[in-house]
Amino acid sequence: MGRRRREDAAMTRERVLASAWQVIRERGAHCVTLEEVARTIGMTRGAIYGHFRSRAELFRALLTDAEAEISLRLARCDADAPGQLERLLAALLDGDALAPHANLLSAVVQHRCTEDCELCPLRAHVLQRAEYACERLRSWLPDPQRANLLLAHLWGLLSAQSLWLVPSSLAHCVAPLARLYAGADLRLASLPCASVATAGRAAVRDTP
Image (cartoon, rainbow, N blue to C red; front, side):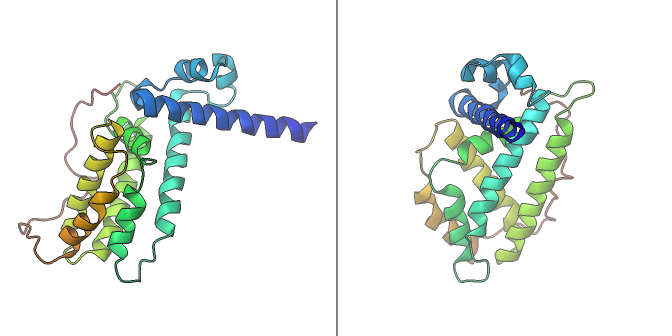
């Protein structure tokens, strides 16, 4: 009986997360609240509360899902083989599965801060992971300064995709991006490469 209850609880938790991702796909991460997720899935807020005590807890679980999906895609890339950058880009831009992830990351980074804000630690985590991504990219590019620019380029494409401003698949962008960033024709000014985590931050973030 105890095992059955644990299995039921795990299934309910997965349904809650799936419902939250559905809200993100249809309306954006700023619309994700415990009440809205409960309404979407046809459950009471109390039932949701048994799995996630706050919106921040739900966002933390969603970020864990997003990181797992991205890591799974990147794990399929052989970093030591020729053409690794193109395979990396293909892993990130194939289909539209990562568009909701980009929407979630944007919402966390740009959230509206309040006193005792619970999302700020998640924002710090996202920025730390972005800096780690830049470090990985620097090791794969002929010019380390291109890493930040490429990350911003990818972020913009995925964010536009999450807003339905570009086609459902960005696979057609893979080869041109790989040629642009891996080639010798791209010239950048000789400026220090700013850290993602320590770059100047906006004093006010007004995304709900």
